Amino acid sequence: MGLKDLSRSNGDLESVLAPLRIALRLEQEGKQFFSEAATAVTGKAARQTFEFLAAEEDKHVRRIQHFYETLEQSEGRDVPDSDESDADARMIGFDNRMAQLRDEIRPTLSDVDAYKMALKFENGAEEFYARQVALSADPRIQKFYVWLINEESMHARVLNSCIQFAENPAAWFEQRR
Image (cartoon, rainbow, N blue to C red):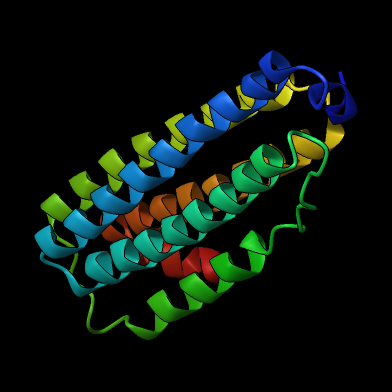
């Protein structure tokens, strides 16, 4: 069903808005988790990683709010366009910053545990967004969730990179060649 049909039926619009409210809550919880983790971890790289991820989640919150509010205010007639994700470029930038900190980084076991916990959170959000793509018949809504999937996937790659760096720095640097 297209969004033109949603403007005629409040129940159909609600079926689009309800998962967006869940997505908003997921991103807000992610921001809170990453902000708290940034203050709890001991390593500089871990702190910077979690600060980066908290800022990323903040961007997602704003994006979801805009998407939601536009749909709600237009009663489903207007769907904001979703840009292509630049997650791959941001991932490269993140890894480059990590490499520059080579001599300053001494990850601890608690940092690795925090990375692994954060990775579970990111994977759960990505799975939720993938289900929403499958449930939506509107390609514009699907595109928005695909954008979110790409973002969460990049976050998971950041966390996996941090885990690999912490567990085997030599292999991490070798992989970058």
